[in-house]
Length: 384
Image (cartoon, rainbow, N blue to C red; front, side):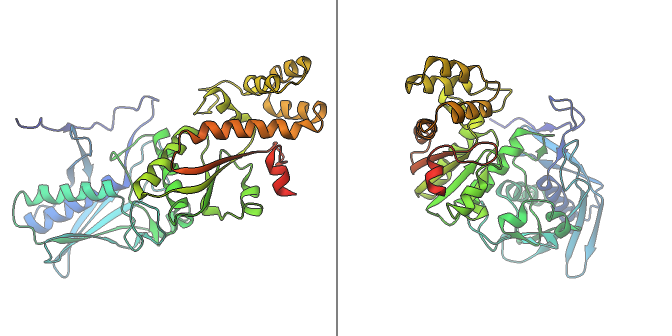
């Protein structure tokens, strides 16, 4: 039975949040490859090309800004990056592809000017390779096959670049990730979803992969900036092994487990460092700590206080606190020497809950801090 024909993907249809979608750098690079190859093999100077998206139901029509032949039997095409309403650093950039037959019968992906090269382990692309992610590579392979249409494949060098890409990359996380020389060619769907959580979470996965890249003894999660000083000064972790996970606790744990299983490896210690306002929500089984998806943590904190034998009046005050930071102040003022043991108990309970989600991690260790960075539980002893 023949597969159903692809249908056009309409970028003019707004995303559910009402904002405009765009095309990824991967889609732009694929379109540039296809346009260059059409000129090289068919003498067609296309003003737009259709590229197959990873979703087999759709293709995307992409305008081509320029295309021409070069010396040495190569062709080059340029495509303008369009990010819709997403605040993308590459929006408006010129993505180009130079396509050259190589006689090897294989495709080779190269970094032209403005596209980076991977230098650290842990990413989906090994060190020494052009920073062109797997899905864009597969899109380009399909585009080449579509132009060849069954004709003999001599093999091609696909050199992907970006005008001013090295300058653009300074505004991204590429320098921190060990990607040097320019931007990355990215995208898992070929479509930019404006302000998408998926893009945010995908970036967290990349940071986790980098943190685990050299299979260290320990890495750390921080929901925000609180705890980063402890990671550096007390735990001795470099910045590349400290991942800011925002509200995505459960998903981040899943990324750790998936990466370790993929590499058939284990992690000695996963540190989780931050304020109890977010982390203590896990006492109630909350894995996405965004305020729009979860309640505040005072109830769970108060429940632990009750189980720990604190006076009913104190438990009531904690439960009625307007913020968890207020509960921290109440405990500091009224619990005396028992405050540290109380927060240590919460740390241990949260760690035990997290541990169930990462069986490839030997130990999850949680450390809580007040808003000014003061250690609340076990970290107080470690900082001493």
